[in-house]
Image (cartoon, rainbow, N blue to C red; front, side):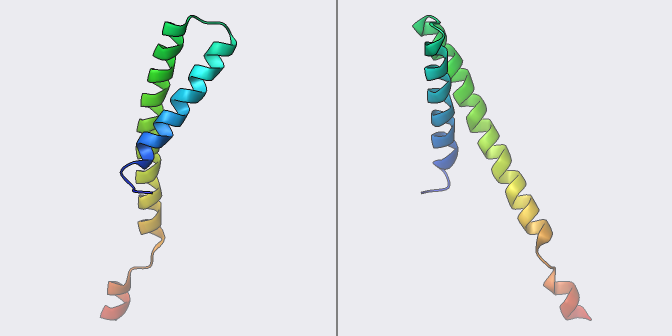
Length: 71
């Protein structure tokens, strides 16, 4: 899967889950779509944030070879 599409897919999945949950509580359809859209935006932003944190953690844990070579 392309790295660019991962946040879109995760946001879409979160939005669909929230739409289905709100439909169980018999909320009007237009309100379910609004809640689902807001959840999709939040899922998209959260996915991007988590990917950045994951990359930062990965680079932090890698040993720095340039300092070892200098000695």
